[in-house]
Length: 481
Image 1 (spheres, helix red, strand yellow):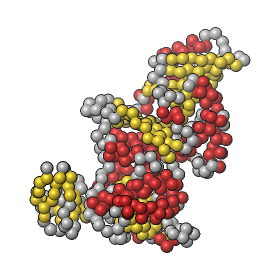
Image 2 (image 1 turned 180 degrees about the horizontal axis):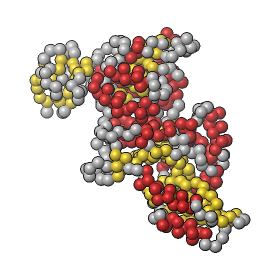
Image 3 (image 1 turned 135 degrees about the vertical axis):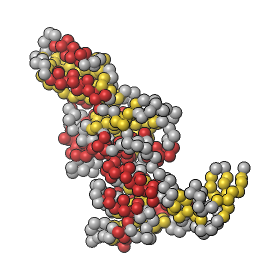
Image 4 (image 1 turned 90 degrees about the vertical axis):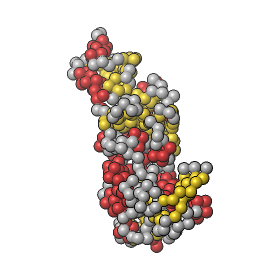
């Protein structure tokens, strides 16, 4: 049923215009009349004007990803306008070195004046493709406060300063989009912000770093050692000359902080994420894992504890190498591909899979965000980031998993009983034991039932003190199907 109602500009719950008028509400959706200007308030009472002219885009940065995005935008803009009616115009690109040689299409757009992007009246949307937190943080904040929507690929920035930037965007009535900051072309953040806004997500499990996944795939399938796998990743362009952020779990921690914040609607910072890298894995861990029916992956995991509506629930966030059951969907995510596996109370299991990095996948995600931001400008609206208060974190010591534990012990009567007794005293239940004799020594591999990490660490510390234990090798968590 259609009905006509009257609204006045002074009512903060209703749209206002340069002249009073009637507004048509049909099936719950607002339809603008032919007023010359329409303004829609955000939660803070700030009004953003609707737009019926071309949307002007300014860029901060023009490196590998930035150049790919700029060229992609120029190439796709005519089709976007034909399909959606959104006219995107790339006005200028601010870079550190304006004298550096650029492609013919981009050269006329280059400037070294950042304020020609962040403060200019003729820029509507800012696309930030710099690296690092500063000065990107200052530039993005300035753009938001100047009333410009921002699209960014900067995971470190969002993981560190997300809540501050979300608040600034909402206060100005503009958008902040950052799909590329998590899993590049895989549209998982849009799903969490929009499609699953009302879903009770209970866990996020993912492979979110292409470099480490490429290396682990080569180590699992071709028998490469860590150093050789890293060298080949660097030669193929999948690893940076300094791979620290990728192999230590730092990159995955930033992405998990973003994913978990949106999944659980609570602010989670990168420093909240417990992380372990892949650089301590031993060659025989891969062989043992295969014999037990597992593959080794670098896993980003976030889970919430307690039923919905039961008060403030605790959240655990970790990045770690793990033995993943070969029947789990994540076990088949190979090479540089990424995937995120969600569990929802109503939606059930969901997996999102695709390229998690690279020039063109990143450019695609950036362009998707830009089109959405431009469409919101055209409609005079914006979408806030759905985030509540800071998360209540469950201490790592209380997070529980099945574990894989590898020991080297003396090959003598009573040793296995002694070691098992230590585990038992710390409430670690053994699921299976495998022993391999080596002259006067033996390698023993334990697979445990679920045990809290604090208990496992205490047990390992006691095992190290035993004369019969010659060495403690890998202790890895297990992800079951």
